[in-house]
Length: 94
Image (cartoon, rainbow, N blue to C red):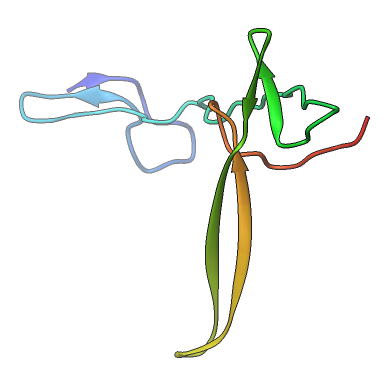
């Protein structure tokens, strides 16, 4: 076997390989999200700016099913706005 030694106090080898198999860590604190601060049109809050051009937010309506046990308790209707980069998570004034 070729690989790194086990970390102290753990019962396994962290990284390595032999003639039949190889193993490694698949996570190393990856960058899994990006946050954008979009400029919203002060004259029309349904538009945002990309490269000096105003674009409309894409609007999607969806329903959330609220369950209690095996039965549906209620349905909640929501609207989501999305830019060309990502869904809008929050909006602050100013």
